[in-house]
Image (cartoon, rainbow, N blue to C red; front, side, top):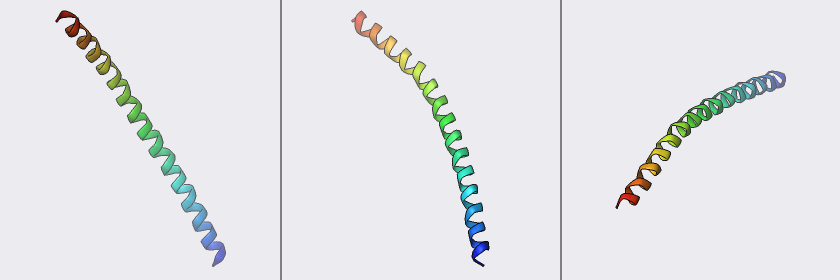
Length: 56
């Protein structure tokens, strides 16, 4: 009984770690993609904002 429990815990821990790593990679990939999208948007926004303040 004890051996079976230990094995279950070990398997569930490995399963959890695999899912955790997968989710971290997925979220990190999405976040990196979003920051890449946000960066040009922010750059364009700052660029246009600077030009508008200069023209006034």
